[in-house]
Image 1 (cartoon, rainbow, N blue to C red):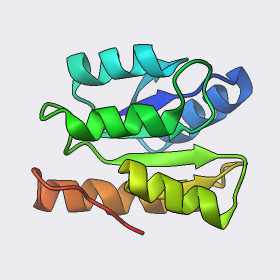
Image 2 (image 1 turned 30 degrees about the horizontal axis):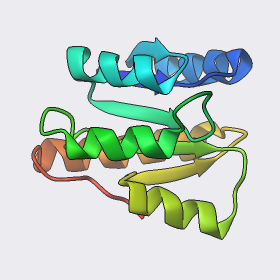
Image 3 (image 1 turned 120 degrees about the vertical axis):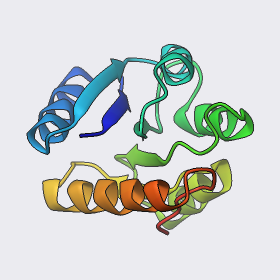
Image 4 (image 1 turned 30 degrees about the vertical axis):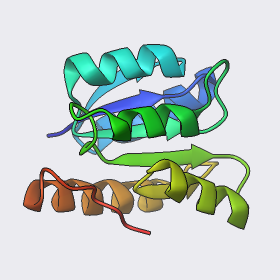
Length: 133
């Protein structure tokens, strides 16, 4: 069982993501904005982060870049979640340091596949990013 941090400001999306992650047997940590998510990531050291891109205040791309620049959180895989599934968004998530990209609405098969791939890569190479693009 992995500890997965979900950073999502939409209550319905948070509920769905939490349900899916728990159903897969993982522990869930929740944050509703980037600032709290960064603090929780540093303190709890989750195995993986699901990061909404469009957050109030600091956006998810900025938060991901900050996580990847911090030695304490740089190796934590980040899956970008966005409702705006455009090619440019996927490229922006890669530049920010996200390890995978999933468009909303969440489809459990796609989410589980990305989580499993990234957790496996992180377990094999714990100090390097686990990109799946």
